[in-house]
Image 1 (cartoon, rainbow, N blue to C red):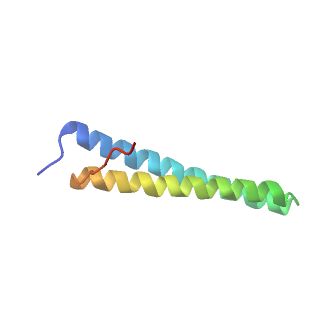
Image 2: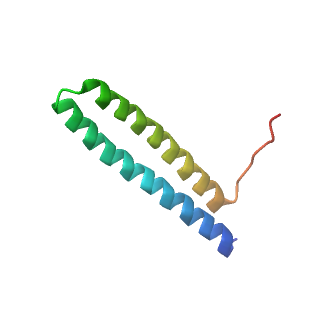
Length: 79
């Protein structure tokens, strides 16, 4: 069964934000390398930790987009 208009839009939006996160992480890795070359190792490491968070979030959004596409969204409410 095909996705309806809203599901398709949600999938596209999730993929777009995931892509933005990926490219932001790439840019930040370049900045971290420049910081490292300038002798600022502490800030370079902080930026790299931020990259790890962005990459994790990107993977999560890609998973959500796949769930939308396959209509297999399953969440339970946790109290």
